[in-house]
Each structure stands twice: as structure tokens, then as C-alpha cells.
Image (cartoon, rainbow, N blue to C red):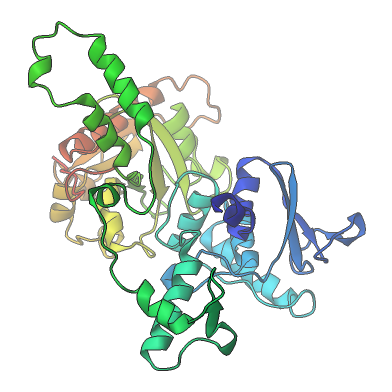
Length: 422
């Protein structure tokens, strides 16, 4: 049943297509032929996915399980957000306006303009970076919603639709469906087996066999008598729900005088080579970099880098691990703490300047909470910039130190996420 629900879900098929590298096909027909294929999403009415050796076609107006602020988003809007995943928030908004101008004369309908946070959340789930999302309902939520709707209708005296009023049981007897709905709302009692297993029997025999094998391999261990049964520990671990991994956030300065901008920060932090922002590729509204921090996690940690907090949720501040600044106090007006002294007592600050110049007074006035580092001036080529790697390591060392004090693990912050800056 779960596999069937996934096959019939447009959002799941879009995610699977992206993960398998199979480009969705835009068409003008529910049963497309090569002649129905189009490249303009404003002209398409359907999209076809070729995944798992199967061919599935969905209407672009189909509602999906992605429902930020409890408002379901259609498939066209989700796919359009993915197509513009690397666009800045300004370019993306302009693209939404443009396609909505073409849609009435083409396929009709409109594309929803997702805000910064919603777009990040959707793209992270579609790309497989996250396995769950607060805005994406579970596949079986439709059945639960229908049942809740029927229960509410019964409680309000409206009953259920006429064609469902009666149901024939296996013995040929007619039973009032409304009565069955009432029975479904009753709490079912059970014995200790159903209480432990829930509504679905789970076979833990394999876990028990593995535990027994481990116990037999250490028969003379004097500590074994004082240890709890390993089979029970294995069962407990199997029943623990998977925890959603939280990615740490690094804030860049939006100032035009900042040496590190969205256009060149990934090359700098990933490769250890500084290039000026005007010589780098076009800027985006968000980049991701990965870094191995052995004191926190044996596997690489993914960091999100942004230069604006306009779409920040309050909970995002618990994930901020560093703030790059040029010392200009207007940068902090929209932050959780607008006072620089208080801000950098919670989050490590970093200033990047030229090696031939001293940090400006506005930076030194921020105190020890801000780490000043220097890079050599750009000479028109990336060759010979071996000192950049040393600067990058100092920056990552400061970030790792702050995360360690905040008790970060591979799954997220251990405290309230307020990283000490000193």
C-alpha cells in the first residue's frame, strides 16, 4: 500500500526523478506522444516522469503534499521552484511574474511565489538533502483527514454521504456506516502484546538472534551478569524515531565592501583560494559548503550560507554558528541581537580584510568576539595564493570551537544554539 501511494504521489515522483537524474518531460496531454512534448512550462498541462522503469504522468495543476502555512502548493509551482533553485530571490520572483503573464494565454493557472524559507525547505527535500519537512505531509495523511472529516460531520449532525450510509458485512447484514464511524472513535483495549507492538506486528527475531550470538561470543565475561540484555537494547534502538538533522547556518555581510560575498565564499571556504566577488560567478541567494569537523562528527557537515535574514524563522537563530561582518552596525538591525556586544557574545564573528591594511576602527570596537583575518590582495590570478588556505583553516577553527562549546553533534545543536563568541 505504501509503494502504491508513492507511485500515485506527484511530489514523490518529482523527488525520485531528481535523485535518479531523470529529467521530467513537459507535455500538453495526459497520454503524451513525442508530438505533445514542450519545453515551456507556461504551455504544458502535464509532466511525465520516467523512474523505476515506469512511466507516470501527472497534471501540473495537481495539489501536492507541500503545504507551507497549511496552503497546498500545486505541482507546477513545486517544479518551477526546482527549475529556479540556483536563482537569487530577486531573479526567482521576476521569473514567477514572467511565467504567470504567459500562463493565461498558454496552459492557464498560475505559479505560486514561494518565499526564501519555503523555497529552501522544498529544494532541500526534493534534492534529498533532508528526509523530512514540516511543510510536507505524510503520504497517508489523506486518509486520516478524510476520517477526521467524516467524524466532524457526524458530530455536527450532518452524517456521511447517502451512498455510504449503509454497508454490507461479510454475513450479508446491513450496518449503518455512521455507527461504524462512532465505533472507530472508541478507544480499543488490548493485552500486553498489542500494547507493546502497536497496531502492527513487528518481527524482532532477527535482532534477538544477533544479540544472542553476541552473548555466546563472550561467555566468560565477568561483567556480562551485570549488563542488561543486549536484545532489549537492540529492540529499543530499532524503535527510536529518526531525528531530523539540522544544518548549521553561516551569515555573510550584505555590505558591498565585504571581501567575501555569495559569489566567491564557496570557492574560498571549499578550495582555500580567494577570488574577488566581481571576478567570481554570478551570485545566488544561498550556497552550501561541506566540512569535516572530527571533534563534532566523523562525517562531513553541510553548512548553509546566506547574506539576509529577511525570511528567518525564530528557530533558525539556534542554528547560526558564525557571522561575517565589516563592522557596519546597520548589518545587525534585523538580527536577533542588534547590539554588537551582545550579538558577538552569542555568535562567533569574523572579519576578512587585506593583509596590507589594519582592521578599521569600527571592527576593533566590536571586541574579542570578532576574529580579524587577512588575505593577500588580488593580483589578477589565483596562482601563488597558498596563504589563503591558512586563513581558511583559522576561520573553520573558530567556527568549530564555537560549535563545540554549543555542544553541536552531527544532528544539530545541543544547547539553545547560542554559540559563544569568546
